[in-house]
Length: 326
Length: 241
Image (cartoon, rainbow over all chains, first blue to last red; front, side, top):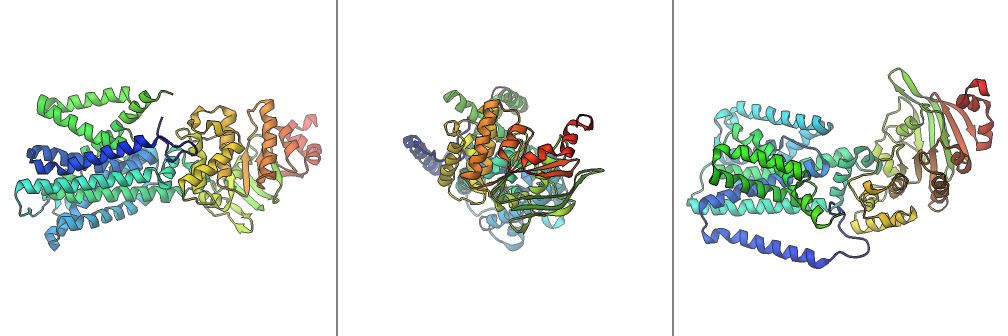
């Protein structure tokens, strides 16, 4: 069964030891992760972790709408791309560092989400998903033909005047920070009144309205917040890639990957997308490294099918059900 | 407290509610009865803003709510249940009610306080022992009480109950009659209910409004209404009258 959305239990307090111990372990893990570049690990390993941090941030932010509210978006890449394009244009036109323009990038992504979300969020279920996919296609076409942002030739970032090792270490720390920030914010939302409202509207939107929930506004808020984080992550990750082009940033596969990671981990809690992003990224990398890139997709697909059959609610729910049988 | 003036609601060529006037006085238990398809639930849906009225006005505590949105009407103090119960199945019993405290008239900001208030309501409806079960673990009669608890959690001054008694056993109906009086007497909430179980209507309601083909057929105390010829005709057909 899912953990209580409303944290505190009314009478008997939950065993505190467990949560504080989990918190301590998390903090130690984070300190270790953050100090990893000091030990000069191989560059490919840092790159892998940077990509994992990106997906943690994208999947967690996607989950605000996709998991809690049950609005499965296939257009999350749009906001990621808007963030990336903001920092690229900021650098090429105004000479501003992407580390400074990533936040405005997130804000622009949030603003676009507000405009697009207002009509699109009136649709539910598959209609919403299809519209969000179309939205991604339309934005991709616009960017492909918009010469100011490079059109189909894309945009280059100016390289940081540091060694490749230092470059990786900087991006590693910043992306770790973004992944952590996104996860903490989503975790906070999940335990707040806001999160309780989102879960209620996933369960039954009509009932949500009869208990006083302004469903339209709540959905829009979640959509904007999720898009902000996608834009923020995109702003930095674009710089890390050093070259962006619509066919790369708007890639439909990225949207699908986000969705699979969330479902794989379980999209009822903040821990699901985190686990999903980490495990699926690692699995993919292991297959590519040890078995071969040619059949990686086949194996990847096979694993997913098996998981869907045996743990349809994701790993988190699967483990929880085994721990406390009801 | 709640007043409708010439309320009209059409679905295509069908006029489900036709120039309907009604009044629900503060502190009373008022029943809305009528044969199937006579427009009872439609009227509830118009009052709560699910369907906009095509004509007429609805006034609640002196305020025109005809064009207000559903969540605004809830926050003004009108709670409702659904004819087919709609518990939030993926959430626990306590969460079902606590969310309504958070978003209802009090706009409670504290999770702990919301849970405390929700638990009080669950005790009131004798569901407190089930509070940590998922709502899907409740049986039909309990689901109905959960639905009422959720409606009460927004701290309404008026509650609309849509067929709370249907499908209940004899004993459960008896208990529910007691519950309706408790809601009015102990919580001071005005009750407007739709009902098919005549025994329950006759025992609880101080006033009954009869609707038939969207038009008001009769109105008055239960005894009067039950002797009304037009009402008997509508329910049993002219032949038997």
